[in-house]
Amino acid sequence: MDIAARHDDPAVEELARAIYALFPRCMRCGIEIRRYEDADVRILTNRVVHRGHCADEENQLGSGLSTGTPGEG
Image (cartoon, rainbow, N blue to C red; front, side, top):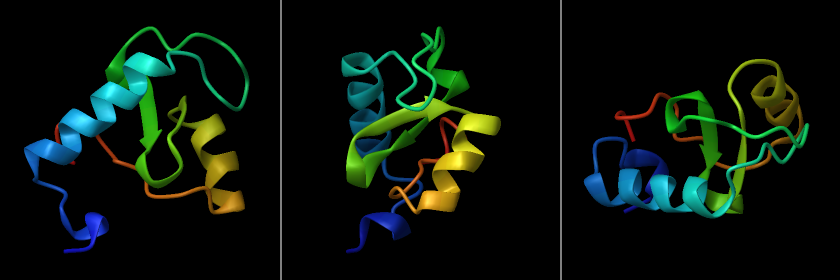
């Protein structure tokens, strides 16, 4: 099954949290992301960025699948 279709899969959530734990700094601006809830984890590219402005800039580049809101996938 395509990972993009697995929004409710706990394994995808666990993977996103693991990527955030490895990369707690925004890969766009370099500032620490203090809470997982403030992170936009790009699973397919193992990138972590701040939600909002940094995530919007990443979306323009097509940087991989975002997990969306924490707890939703």
